[in-house]
Length: 465
Length: 99
Image (tube, rainbow over all chains, first blue to last red; front, side, top):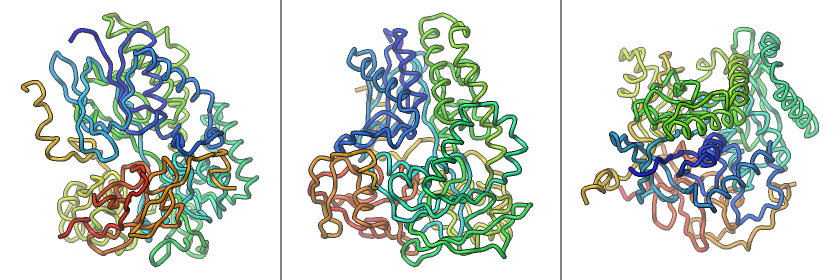
């Protein structure tokens, strides 16, 4: 290989920050991303054909986005960055001393293969939402909170007229205010976190004044849109025949159990639900990178334990866009130095490192505050489908544990097919583990997305031909 | 207020696609899922086991719940697939294949 080069996988905040930091320092970068436009989930843009003249109405930190967007544009025009849109990366292959081959599928059909060679790889694959099961959660009209937001930001559409936003986590706030600003009636924001645990972690949370201001701004917007916020409450069930018509909500007791006497029904045609986020770690795992729990493990320079592979953003642990930017920036600088054959000086990125440390501490506190109800699995009736793809019921999972002796998630899967469908257990993993009472283990998938057999058969043949 | 007003959108001219033969309008750049939501449709698949209705869930291509048949190709993710004039969307039953 002649000139050192970098492949960045993911054009969200982490991938963009790394791309700009590395390209500015003379590294040739190929940025691969599955979307038609850069931005990732956080800065997801409306399709150009929709002609949005004020897209910032749906966004926060718009000036940061403008800097990233304009920086990318300048590098693409200068030929220092190649931005490959609509590229769905399914595997990163180590090629010995030659570096890496990044394998992708092109376009929304995802049938045509593409391959990119690079001497170093940055994994900035982001995360996706965790949703725990409850009766009725497969009804049309029940969507993930982030999904509702993605459809609003990208397609300028709403799922319905009256929404309940529910679950737990900081994401519920922008989703509720975003839906309300775009014209939906938000009947309630139902958050299972206990206000007492906010008080207990107040010092750690107040250590980030920017985040406190952000929280205050959302509170103001919720008031303005007259959105009722119910803390320490949960959705017990979703109701409807062919689509969502109402939800039952209830307060939680001290132990996190549903207080049956507080059950009540809210009429709605949309339930936007989320119980947190999970990192995409498939590419890292397949490369042999260490994954701690659910997060790709990195050092102070954002290097994984596989030489030539860096990781930044949500894939190294959920922490939002500002943390992703800091990590991406550090990764880009580290990569630029290492590919030039020198050890980087961490003093160059001291400010970014301080931001990173502060935000990691903040999100550790956030994680301990926002939690699903401790006994959520008790509310999952035997008839509730927990694996949406394979239509495996909670009853079948419980039978595998109690009648057939399954003691771990893998055995539950082999006995029930839970997690064997299209999504490969990404959606149901946490839910099945909770219902089974098994420890949640990170899913191991050789490929990051479904690959046509013909593409798989031809991959790696290019050198011989 | 609606989302288009919120961002002061001036979309290109709407075009026609079909859902099970019925004409619906779509805006340039919208995905299958976005156009169906605009048309008030929230379900466009039935599951292969119980025949239950499904539509959009994760919205970012992870969950595969929004599978639909577009121009006779089954199992396309409605949340990712951009529409073109004249596209024929069909409700997908089961695997989407004749089996």
